[in-house]
Image (tube, rainbow, N blue to C red; front, side, top):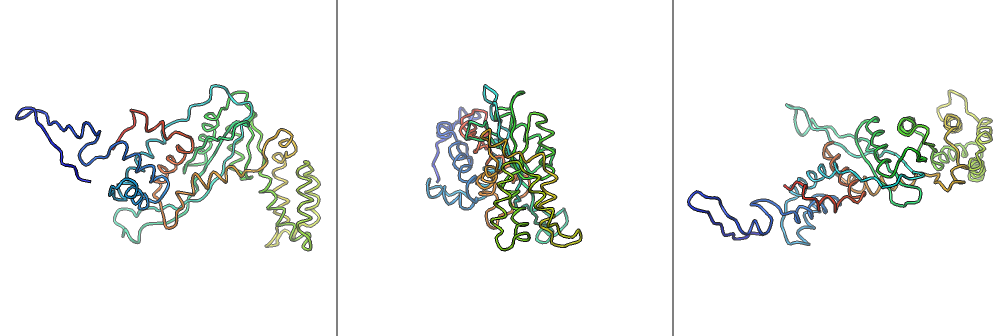
Length: 336
């Protein structure tokens, strides 16, 4: 949209006055705060090309998809620095979960290589964590493409933002990946009790059931699940032990289930969790991956440079953490 603008100068060499720009809060070839907010809002939820179409539909402005991309990623990097203010009172019990999902990453070619053939396409794990007080339905999120150590630090920071205090009981739930168990113990120590996701364990038992009781695997599986819920892990292990495949067997679902449960006995207290009204499944973090991470970063045909993926992750997490209005209301927000 073109605007004919009057320009005045104070004297022959004085300052240039642009009344329209000053009143509208814009600069030549620039974008107002309101327009930047709209570009980032659309760019955070849809592809940059689709976001440009929405700007045209709702505001009648022709904006290039590249402009939407630049604004979204620049503000995404800035909003990532905002921290969630911790509650005034520490939580008595905190629910926390951590898991990873793969997102598509493109590695540009090094200098001198053919830009068409030198790039690499790969999948990289985006790690998402959440924490919330037991009596709250609103979690606080954190996400990173960083290392395991960086993920662990972020996990604890996210728990602090959700109400972690020196006397808070921390209830962790997730799959039994060794790196997650290690980070949970390092970050929460004696305050924490980690529970392996009941449904993840059930997947191992379901695979074993098809071998042990092929005529009615569901019945055998339900029996073992009932035992697990009563903390009768030894009985489940005995039921598996009598059907272990040979050690050199290429397909050994029974042996895999037995090994998985035996190595994680300390994290199978389902009866204790249920008695305290605590969840035994990690569906909350899996849902978080879908609506915080995958909904935007796994669009068909999209590949991300790692820094851009980090910026988008930060933007998506900030919106999930209710920091959007605070960011745009702050006079310190740097406009482009």
